[in-house]
Amino acid sequence: MIRDAYRVATALIASLCLCSAPVVQAQEDSAYELWVYAWLSGLDGNVTVGPLESSIDASFSDIADALDFAFMAGLRSEQGPWVWTLDVYTAELTNDFRRSVSLKTEQDILRATGGV
Image 1 (cartoon, rainbow, N blue to C red):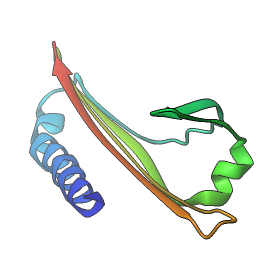
Image 2 (tube, one colour; image 1 turned 180 degrees about the vertical axis):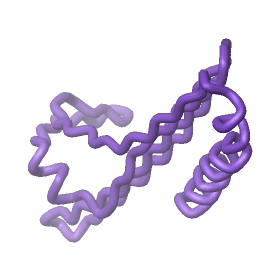
Image 3 (tube, rainbow, N blue to C red; image 1 turned 180 degrees about the horizontal axis):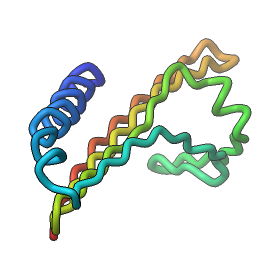
């Protein structure tokens, strides 16, 4: 799943850059922005599964310790009245608990928008 998201994101970014390059030379009202960012957060609350309920309290450092991989980036293209954005987010966390239970979480988000 993660590899597929990387392939799609790479293809979209490359397409935007390659297809838009001649437009940048022809139009003065074109602009591009590329950014890399980080989301720093903790987790506090309750989880309920059927009749079972448990509290969760994970600080930022707890989450950072469990973090295996994360990548977040965005691309924005303005061409005349048109605006296109692409935002890619992926994270993988693994946490081994005291009772020999391992929890692995993967999250991938690919968001594309466009308009006038």
